[in-house]
Image 1 (spheres, rainbow, N blue to C red):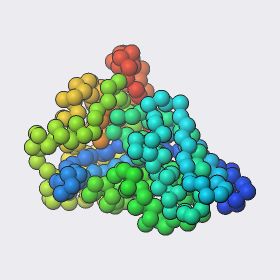
Image 2 (tube, helix red, strand yellow; image 1 turned 90 degrees about the vertical axis):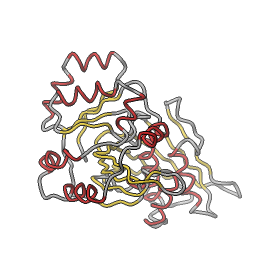
Image 3 (cartoon, rainbow, N blue to C red; image 1 turned 180 degrees about the vertical axis):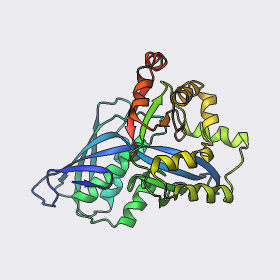
Image 4 (cartoon, rainbow, N blue to C red; image 1 turned 60 degrees about the vertical axis):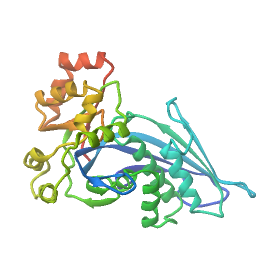
Length: 322
């Protein structure tokens, strides 16, 4: 069975104090089809106007829940082959999501073991950490038979990270505010994609700080209306991309290229390879191209320029929009 975009296989989907509960979920990556800045809140957080799109590249999480006896506190154990992923809930969104979910189950106490197989690269703008957190929340929500309301699950997600609420629903979604105001758009699923990421990542705080210094104009209400109207068109997905994408841009792309100039090489390869649309995702450093066929992507993958990038430590992923 598949719920939303997170495919789940469950060894025990019921609560029994004598039986451990286990579940495996996939956490998809995302791209920002466009990312415009709409202002800042008084607390300094930037307000966004963006269309996020999930895609078929996944991390995989395996969760096991065991009741604890006595007056012990709940705990989360984290396991991964990635040395750079800590088990600190301040730095690990998957751990933070599990802990905040368990807080809603008090006074019952549990041990949650989270095993993560990491595929989505970090510092890429592909939302891997946020998607992992959402996958944990959806898995625990299923194991505990919806004992936490959907609105409460959304609040937990937002407390973990601004992009986490989006991954509770995925698909093609217009995101506003800091990412918590979500409006589903007509699906853009099934479009072939190629993603490229240079070896170096980009610091999100750095990107935003450079954007602020550049004084780039904010998205206007007129632009918002046009972007939304184009997304709501009745055209087929690829035709809608062709019609709408001339207005798509990422306000963080130039700041990111200033930090990691090789981002431009990836964008050039995608454009010259026939991408219907190409851009950087989020604060980078990953770039993506949407194509009219998988054959065009295969031609790029077979090209000398692509092989040169791979020799230089680039990461690449072939996917489809979900």
